[in-house]
Length: 343
Image 1: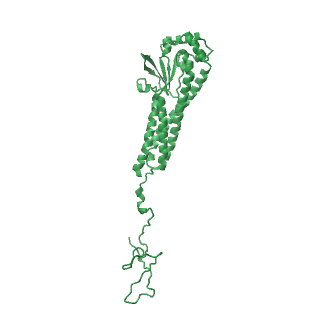
Image 2 (image 1 turned 135 degrees about the vertical axis):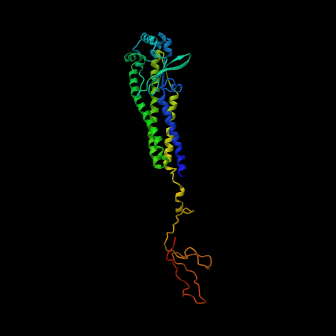
């Protein structure tokens, strides 16, 4: 197929790898820039406190929610006091969006959400509601039930693993783009790139699974507990679309990299043209200064057709005569060899 075919064979997985890297970068950039409307829509989880600020929760409603959540460690009056404290705190935002590196907070005006600020990106970030809301952990543990501290402990540990998985996926995918350049020249390069691509796919898949499962559980478990305060918990859509597109692109790139290890060698088919004849057999070239029978390839002048040379290097044919007398008794003579064949 040649070098041109090799480049065409590498082009598809190369583009897929770049697409996967772009999706991972979008996941990492979510909730990092308050002035970007595109990046503001990339979040794993949103805590909506807009109903909390309006004071729509009544005592009877709080009692019903406590019974539904099976929380007996706190009374409805204590919950009402906590809600009033949140309402009086001007630092409490209408909603909080949780990303990979940090979170953003914003206000809702006339049904329109606007981000006011975002935290500085931090490695191995996890959202701590007690520090954000200005409430002690003991109070949250008491008001949200016995399961809340267990959930937060698991969430903190899994968040660190999720961050590491996304970081390794990003590094492996970027390395895959660089290593993919050598895949243009040989199948060995494709083999090395395939190994890097497998690592990239596995960590991208692990990170996507971790984030999806973890925040889905958080929505189900925390949603019912925080509903007592009028807090709604919602999952983001765009960031999950980006992370799973990264998985799809990474898987497709890995398959095509594997395909390039056994196809599209990059060697020109014309490099062996002189060694093979048109029927695919091997034609032995005649080296200079070698012996060959004079009549092996062509019959002597005047020989009747068809002419079929005998096996070996001896050829029998009627010998020329001088008059009526034969030159030898057997009317045969041995094949003559020219001493040297000149190139």
